[in-house]
Amino acid sequence: MDVPSRADAGRALEARAAGGPAAPDAAEAALLARARDGNLFAFDEIVKRYQRRVYATAVRIVRRHDVADDVVQEAFLRAHQALGRFDLSRPFGPWICRIAANLAVNHVRSPQAREEALPEAHAETPVKGASPLTRLLDTEARAVLARALEDLSAEQRAVFALRVFEDLSYKEIAEALEISIGTVMSRLSRARERLRVALTPYLGAAMARRAEGSER
Amino acid sequence: MSGHPGEILSAFLDGELSAADQAAVEGHLRECPACAHELEELAAVDAFARGLPVPAPAGYFEELPGRVRARVRRPARVPRLAVWAAAAAAAVMAVTVTPLLMQRERSVTAPAAQSAPYAPAAGAAPPSTVPPPEAGFADAGATRDRLLPTPPAKREAQGRLLERDRADKPATLPAASALPRPAEEALRKTKANVGGLAAEDRVAAGTATTKAPPESEVAAAPSADARAEPTADAQKERVAPPPERKLAAGGGAFAHPDDRALMMDKRYQALLSRSATSAAQARALRDAWDLFAHDVPAPPRADEARVRAIEAGALAWRLGHDPDDLAAARARARAYLDAETAPQAARVRALLESLPPGP
Image (cartoon, rainbow over all chains, first blue to last red; front, side, top):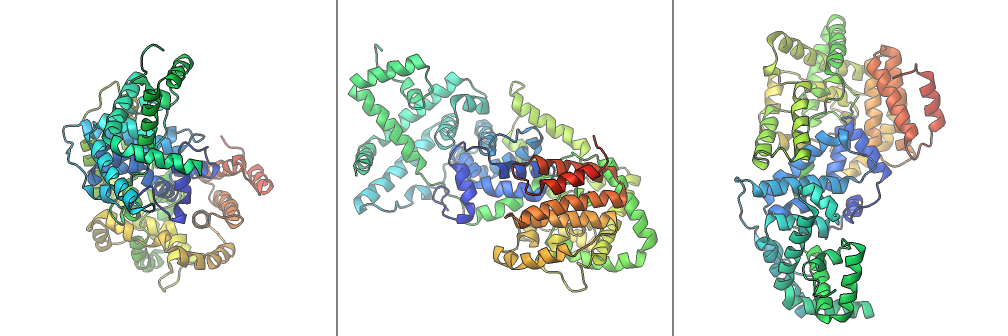
C-alpha cells in the first residue's frame, strides 16, 4: 500500500491536505471544533483524513512499521488532548505532523529504540510508465535512495522529511524539533548532500528526462 | 561572493537565506556551472524522494482509526460532577417509575452496546463518559513511556503536553475500581439505570422495537448504546477480547457507505417525525440529528440536521431546565451563526434570542 500513489477518491480531502500547507478549510475547522468539544465521530474523521500523512512522516523517520504505528497513535492521542489549545484558524496537517516528527525523533534517540532497517520491499516497488530501461534505472535508484535515507541519522531524516515532504519552513522545523534554525540548516544541507552523492549516477538521466519533458 | 556557496546552497534552494545572501548566491550561480549543476541535483534529490512510496501493511489504514478511537478519552471539558448528578437524578426517576420496563429493555440494549461501542456527541448523554476498557489505558501508558523516556525541562512544548496529561487525570472519570466504595456503588447503579432509561426513551420515541434495529438505527440512538452497562456477562465479553479489534469490528455508524446511502432517506424521514416529551428524549434526538449531519455531510440535509440538532438541544433545556443543556444549546447556536456558511441564520438567530441570556 503506497501512500503517495493513493487513488481512492474518498481520500480526496486528505490528498489535498497532503499537498502542503493548504489554506485552512472551514469545514475542517468546524470538524475540529466538534472534536474539541468531545465529539469522537468528528475526531475519527480527522484521523481518517490525516492518518496516511502522519504515518508517512513517522515511518520516514523511524523506518519501522511497528514503531511508526506507535508514533501515529500517540501523535493523534496528543493532538486530541491538546485540541483545546489548537488555533482552529491554522491548518491541522502540519501541526499533527510536527507532533509525530517530534515523537519519532524522541523515540529514535531513546535507549529503547530498536534501530533495525525496514524491510526493503518498498525499495523494489516497480516504477510504472516509461521505457523498460528507464523503469529499471528508476527502480534501482529508488532502492539506492531508500538505503541512503536509512543511512542518515534520525535527526537528519526528520529535518529532511519535514522540509521536503511537509514543506515546513526552517523556523517551523526548528520549533517542532526543538533545535536552532542554524542546526536545521546544517542538518538539511548534510542530509541532501549525502543523498545527492548516493544518487549522482541516476540524477543525470532523471534531470535529462525532466528537461526533455519540459521542452515538449 | 568569493567562494562556492557549499553548505548554504541547500538553504538557497529553500529560499531561506537573507536577501543579501540570496542575491550573492544567485550571482555566483550565473558564473559557476559546477554550483549551478549541484543545485539542480539537489532539487532532483528532493523530487526523487517525493516519489518514493511509503509502504504500509494492507488494511492498516482501515484499522487505525478504530485503534486510535479506543485510546482517545473524552476531554474533561464538561464539569463531571454536574453531569453525573443529572444522570443520577434521571436514574432515580427510572428506578422509581419504570423498574419492570427497564429490566426488559436492558436485554435489548445489551447487543447494541457491543455493536456501537462509543458515544458520538459531546454534550450528549452524560454516561458516554464510560471509560474504555482498562487494557487500552495500560497500553497507552506503556507506549507513551516507550516513546518518551524523560523529556528535559527545556522541551517546553512537550512539558506542556505532559502537564496537560496530568491535569486531565483527576478530571476524567476514574476506573470504577479506583473509586471509593460508596462512589463505586453509586456509579455502577447510575450506569446501569441510565442504560435502562435511555432504552425506555428510545421506545417512547418509536425508534426501537423488539426486532434488532438496523445499523443506522443503532447509530441513531447512540445514547443508549454507549451508556449501557448491562450485565456482568456482557461486561466481561466487552473486556475480554483486545479492545481495538472489538471496536474496529463494530458496525454502528461505520456501516458500508452504500448501505448507509440507502438508509439515509428513511432515517431523515424518521427523524423529522420523531418528537420528544422529556429532556432525555430531546437530547437523544439532538444526538441523532448530530449523527445524521455527520453521516450526510452534504447540504441541504446536513444543514437542516445541524439546525434541528440545535433546536432539539434547546428543547432539552425547556423540558429539563438543566443549565448544561442551555449552555450547550446557546454555544451551538452561536457556533452555527459564526460559521462561514449559515444558510438558516435567521431561524437559528430567532432560536438563540428565544433562549434566556447565557454566559
